Length: 223
Image (cartoon, rainbow, N blue to C red; front, side):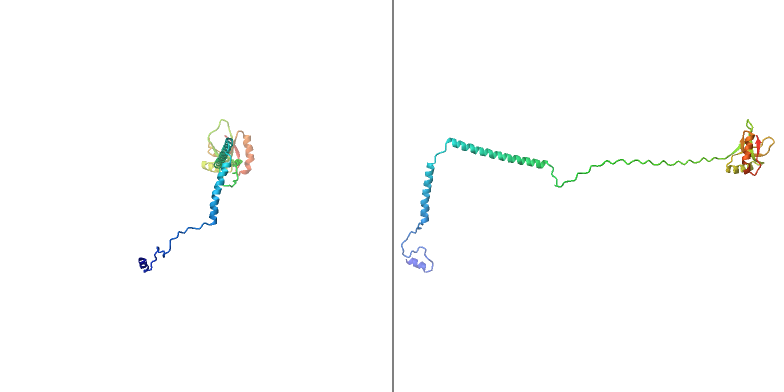
C-alpha cells in the first residue's frame, strides 16, 4: 500500500486500484425480445423439418413432365432468339443494300429533246447581169478586087491615107463600120465607104436611107 501511495503522490491514477472492494463479474441482463427470438427460431426449424417430412416425394412421371416442360420452354426460348437474330440480319441486309438518299425527292432529269434540223433556206442565186455585147465598129481595108464585083457606098475621097483613116475613126465612134478602098489603076484617091453590097440596087437603097445624116454627097462605087 505504501508503494501505491507513493505513486499517487505524483497525480497518476492507478488502473489496478480497487480501493479494497471485491472483484465482481458483470454480464448483460437478457431482454424479453431476445427470449422470444431464441424461442421462435427452434420452433420454426422444427416446423420446417416436420413439413418436409409430411410432403410426399414426386413420382417419376411428374419429374419427367417437369423436365419436358423445362425442355420445351428452353426450346421456345431458343426459337425466339433465332427469330429475333434472323429479323436483325434481314433488316441490316436491307438497310445496307438499299441506296440511302438524303431524304429529298429529286425531280426527274428532263430528257434531252432532239433538236429538229432547221429548214435550209435556199440562198437566192446571184443575178447574173449579162453584159451587153458592145459591137465594135472597125475599119476594113480593101486592097484588091474580089472574084465578084462589090458595090460600096462612098462618103469621101482622100489623097492622103492618114486623113482617110482619121475620118474613119469618127464614123466608127458614131456606130458605123467603114471600108477603105486603096488606089487602083489610074485612081490615086483613097475612097472611104460606109458599107458594101452585092448589087447596085441595095447600095442605092442604103444611100437613100442614110443620106440625110451626111453633108457629103454619097455615091456607089463598083469595085
